[in-house]
Length: 272
Image 1 (cartoon, helix red, strand yellow):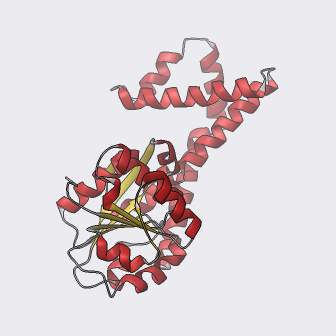
Image 2 (cartoon, helix red, strand yellow; image 1 turned 180 degrees about the vertical axis):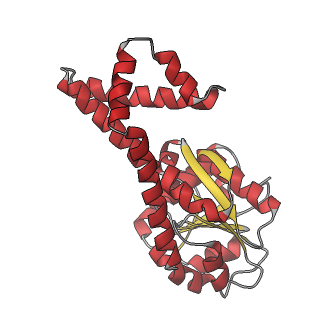
């Protein structure tokens, strides 16, 4: 699918470097077909040394040498970056943006008519190849464009396609979701320490338990409610704990947290 294609990445920070590593480790394209630019020279030198990619000090050089350009820059820097590459951009090139809250129309507005844009909301577990990304295509992006983008993000986790109007929901759920998971793991760890376990053991047990539960949801065909019932014996320990969680409205609180994050994402995006 990406055979013969050249990929450019503008922004060599955490997510940019993760994508480089995923693309190369999955043999999607060779390192010699990847060019990256970044404002920090030391970061560029490190990426060149680590992965063998080409380093460019100018974003326009990345655009000129690439078929697919990934914009891995901060949202507040997007307008400046787009202004800088607009004169060298051609509609034959595919633009993929991972900047949170930036609509495809915003990017299309800076580039030439017919610009093909894919918007992506990745999340931080991509750092270990366990990411969850949602992709939405702009007005001019094709099915092949979407497939190519999905292929890239599947190299660092799972990737799904959604309508762009649902990207705020994705941001509230999987974009912000790792923080909810970390908070739950931290709370479980503290509970273990309170009950006498050492912190390192409590943390290992808590993190592995959450990870194991998540994997059971992904690899099987059982609904989470079914899996929960498998652990819950009549009059047993689990139902006693679940009763406390229901009384504390954990379910409603998590739903409200996702909604609040999604609404904040929508508010930030509306300012673009």
